[in-house]
Length: 395
Length: 157
Image (cartoon, rainbow over all chains, first blue to last red; front, side, top):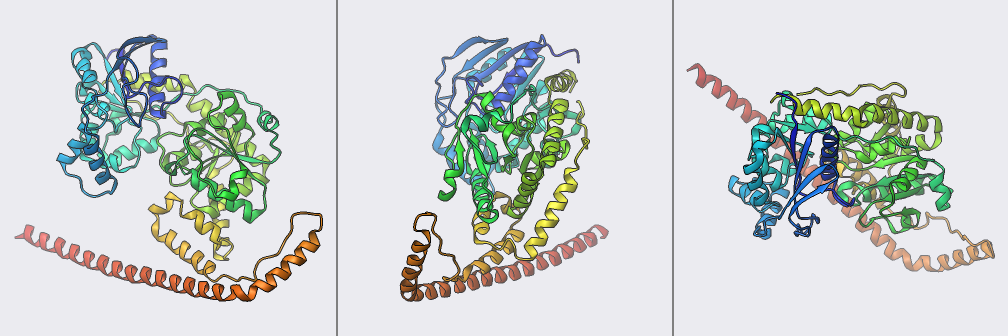
């Protein structure tokens, strides 16, 4: 196949303004870099901004955003949310779901007939179509329009939706997949017997930065050591677990260790621990980086991630990671980089944290390893090389 | 398509080795009862990782529950954070506690009784269903073997 010059990216939302999820940000960044490398990039997305309401809040039509030609299409207004939630609850329970119910679920997911119609009419103009993440109706239906030239950017998680037969069908029909990590590729191999020959591990690039490790603590009058968490705060991300562990850690070891959090959502913590949390909410990139740089460790307690962008950022700040062992991706990143440790339960957590607190040389070595790893594997030139190789490879 | 372009085993610290050391230290302490702590049991309820390793979690949690079930109301120090009149306040609190102890004893002993019964019941349920599951697994294994033998015999015929 000659160089893929004309590329369409498809995502249910367009990452603009910093409040959109990681998968959309990933697709937008890949699109930006493909466009900057001289490829003609069209971005197809919906008019929705909220992933709760999926209300069409942006005007439909075409807009130039940087180097990208972005087309906004309305989300179908006739979706039956009640039916969608009924089947979703059934899927969540993990019981058997009939093909008919799977069909009801995906038809009433977030869809855009206008987007698919555009793709039908204009898909011939593109050499490659990249669509993701995997569990939205927009992605599922778009992938069926020109499957032979479609590459999924699935951001696949080990969750109930991934086990649906219709997902197996989608993965089986497309030309290939761009995964974020080796464990994500292994998951697709396990679930769908997805062949390595049709897959590439690309990930997202990060730009190196410098951050003063003392600046954040000085600015906030923080004299005690702290660990850091950045991202959404919710049960599935493991933030209540982190707070409960740190509360137990303080009580058991007598160490005055604080928690610094950035991101959105309420923090569920034991009441006695609340005063030891510095919740910054949304902050500037520089503030976040300086907070990371001064931390004893960046703790990522989530058990189900397809790509740990914040962990990579923490490593760029020179801070070691401490992650949940059940997250295959985060654990893989720590093992690959030699930049972080992992815990199964509280005893592991306490032992690991005590070592990180008491051994500054270990902290530094882990942080340096992590930083070197990100600069080697996730600098944009390395990611672009993997992306373009995947785009230009026939299949 | 492209193969992975990641380097394995970056130089420097060996985290696999470190984690193995940490796990060994944690397991030794667990065996010694260092982590049999109600605070940990409470925190572990939030550990989603345990949902995938239910047997290990249940054993650990039951041990914590056993250790935490029988409360000793005398087992806490009486302290005073304020420096001013600190010793006098501690003495006063001790007197108050001495007076209340008699009245709280009944509640305390009832609570201990309930806790003990609950632990026994939970352990009983666990043991009962563990035995039932083992029996079912054994039967499934026997039936699968029988099925395989029958299907071989069918092919031979």
